[in-house]
Structures are given as structure tokens and as C-alpha cells.
Length: 141
Image (cartoon, rainbow, N blue to C red; front, side):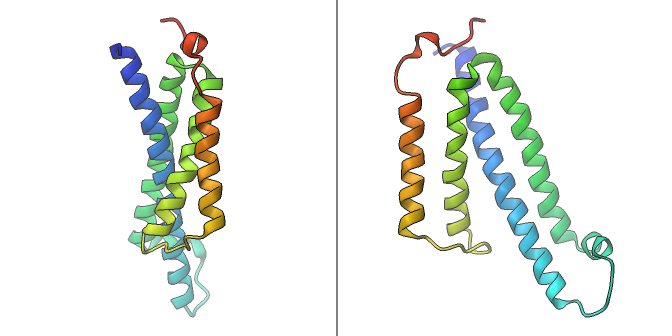
């Protein structure tokens, strides 16, 4: 595997992982915000409530940073790969977000049979869309 191709694979993988992390971090941020709002009794501005809570800001900032880094990795991955090849891989983000939401105790979503089957179908779809025919998949560098 050439160095350029291996870098592109890494960038594509980072895009997927960072995008999933962004979703999970922002969910945790909103869980923290909801807990905070449930405990407040006076009529403070939502802006000041959020700005006074470092936990909400930290998770929100982490999520936004992951989004920005994910987009940067995506742009550079597209230099090497055709969009029709690379884009279906973003479906793996759904899988990672689902698993993260289920197994991260702070989020604690339910593992269900129907969702799990759906996730399996997404993975099958990614494989089928990108199944062998690599002759025209890479841009010439």
C-alpha cells in the first residue's frame, strides 16, 4: 500500500471516528445541560446558565472541535478518493454513534433488536456499495 493511500485510509477512518465522537460529546453536553436546567429554579438566561457551567461548555467544545477536525480530515481524504467511494463509509458513523450511545453509561440508550438489525444492514450496505471494482476508485495523484 503506497504511503499516500495509507494516509488517505487513515484520514477516512479519522473522519468517521471524529464525527461519531462529535455526536456523542454533544449529546453528553445536552444531558448535562438538561440536568442543570432541571435543578435551577429562578429565571436566569439560558446563555448565562450555560456559560457558568464548565462541564456543559467542555463537552460542547469537544464536540465542535471533533466536527471541525472531522471535516478537515474529510477534505483531505477526498483528494485521494472519489466521492462515490468515500461517502458510503460515513455510514459507519451511525454504527459507532449507536454503540457509543448504548455503552457510554452517561448516555445509556437501549440496545434493541430492531436498531441492531438496522445497524447490521448499514454495515452490509457499506460493504455492498464498495464491493470490489477498485479500478476506478482512486483519483490519480
